[in-house]
Length: 204
Image (cartoon, rainbow, N blue to C red; front, side, top):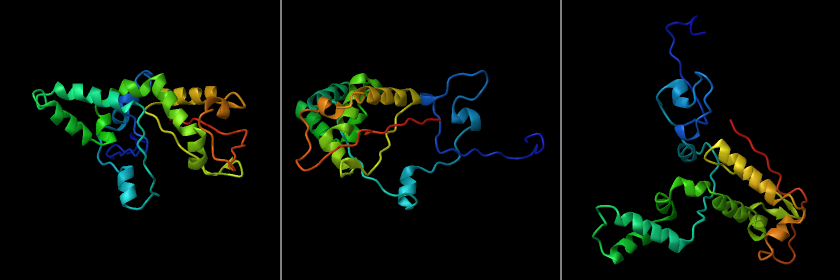
């Protein structure tokens, strides 16, 4: 087509850009990232833009820590001490700065490898499927979930790891109660769907 239209200008559109952190495996001379395929970005329209334009439905964001708070704060304390700004600051000053941080700000001090560990994956899936939490989030009625959920990951490899960990955790028919004996649901409520959770993995 390019030969037929030699003076044409080409634009690429993608809703799932591929960056260096999740680039495709090398296959000859084929492009491995969106930039390799199309060149530099001309314009971006993010989910934030779509929400502001009311083009998509809003959603609730909940921040869940998977690292024990004191350990995380101490880690940030050590990181701040290594910076010129806080190297000579008082301990009270440094801790005050940490106390003013929200969850997202604190995450910036955590190495990406921490989010890719088996321990982190286990904490995430156990939070999602803990009976007292799952009953409400999946809106169980008459023992059956009425809502679905999407779990996004940083890479295809991470998606596969989450999928395998969930399948491993739920392989026993009584997994829900065996895995979470200390998190019962309230009396009068039931979770009786033998196929919960129905899980599928998709990726590009």
